[in-house]
Length: 306
Image (cartoon, rainbow, N blue to C red; front, side, top):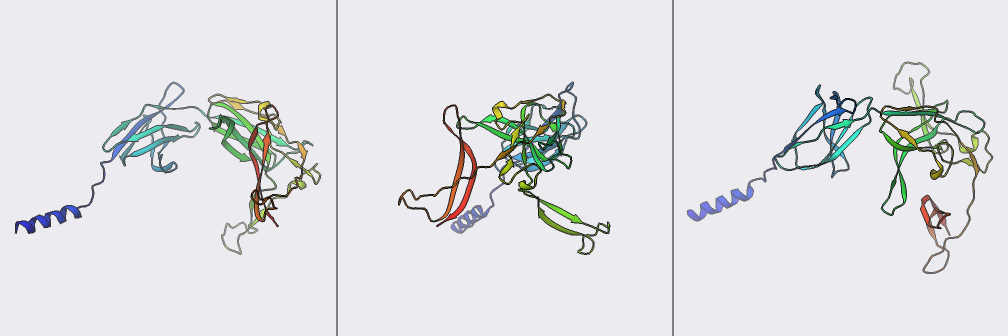
């Protein structure tokens, strides 16, 4: 009988489900850089640092700027705060252990800066659907300068753009022609009734005109990407110094037409020294004129050979 009880007890212990670790909590306060006043109505996201920043919970700051996340599973997280009129803010990496109550140092939000301007053709006409981006310079693992995009948009029909709620810092403005590689949705609703039926509203996807349709271009010309105030070399570009709440206006650029270069060649198999057969992927890289070092990969070409 004793043996039977021991066997039953062992079975019950093995069958018992594993207990989940005790949840923790995260709390903090959001302040404005102006007089350190609390910021209410801030959207606070608790993002999973192990899952590509997937939001696990969202909270709003109260009148005192306070927020709380309860029942937080143990793990690694980051806090991201957004609020109208302010630049978004990312907090430090947070480690939450089972049952731990994490209290963060106050997170300070800065009033967002803005940048506006106009992109034009060489003849002075506005360039619509030009891609404009605010980028920040940094260094990659190999020590080379790399740019990370902070914000991007396309110009309107008047060639105008405006970025807002940007963080303070030093940035560069870049513009490029997007007309030949974009698709837009054209909605036709002749009755104006807002109906989502075939009779009431028709939608069609159409490609924008190619670059050769832009005014002032010949068949072998295109508009290249430029940095403000109008150079293809970022080292000659004028950086934008943004302060909290500052507004930079008339950051205008005129796109320059450049002749396209055609490159011909044959790809060889390095083992047989014979022309390669099938799909070939080639790359084009820049060369630093100062030291001859190879730059980053600018273009990738894929073609069928043989």
